Image (cartoon, rainbow, N blue to C red; front, side, top):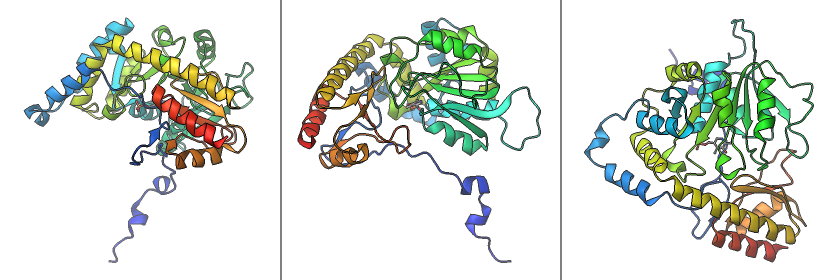
Length: 364
Ligand SMILES: *Cc1c(COP(=O)(O)O)cnc(C)c1O
């Protein structure tokens, strides 16, 4: 018998998949890295101490399977029960689990009262369609209004019966914030599950956490990555009705959150004033950078996140990306029709903002 080719052994779905393309993590000396919305400030000294102190013989043991300590503290913070919370290996893991848990793959014979689609606005987090494709689920991308607001009158393609609707709020990559009233109204028109992905909410005016405790079909997604300077540790969580959380627990890996991540998250929650001071710094830099870039001819959209979305003057955004890179400033550019005229710029420290402004002035 002839040995099969490896390719013939891979599922066609996987063979044809376009994986997610994360922002670059290059190792260029002196690079100003403003491309992946990481927090420019380090985790609290308490977090660093606790993680270092935990690196000993304990590493041979399995961590708590449900990140119980973290759930208990989060429950107090959000005035709910630990049963309303599931912790994940980053919120990306939980988003993938939500698709697995609530949406049938295409071709399934199961009959349900919801439409088997993963629905999301465009532009929003570009991981959503990738996760749907991995699961073999149908997607329903629906355009936001021209100013990136949620359209008042839903386009004809909008499905209020979608099995799962994912909403990035505040929106990425535009940085636009949505009011809780608008989100509440939207949730009330949807019959399937709604995930409000609040990855950037600590930099916003409002959050919609209460909707997850008010409605049985609404999930709020949060992460320690962006606002809490913890991308490296991979910790995120969902808040939702207990029955939804129980279902998600059934399909996650038994030890999905690593032990050092649990320790880091727990210590983070014990030092929130440190982080709140950082949010203020980021917001102040955001305001100053927006004003300075506006003076230089950029059209900067109002932002409620730790990045800005700005249309540069003079030459196309894609060229700005390359020219800034030559000057060792890395920003993000997305090739889609509705985003191709803009640069997404992460808010760094004041020194990093100044370096960006110097580079921009040399190019203008
Ligand atoms: C960064 C990001 C996430 C993922 O965060 P992790 O917890 O690091 O997986 C989720 N949603 C949006 C919109 C993000 O920008």
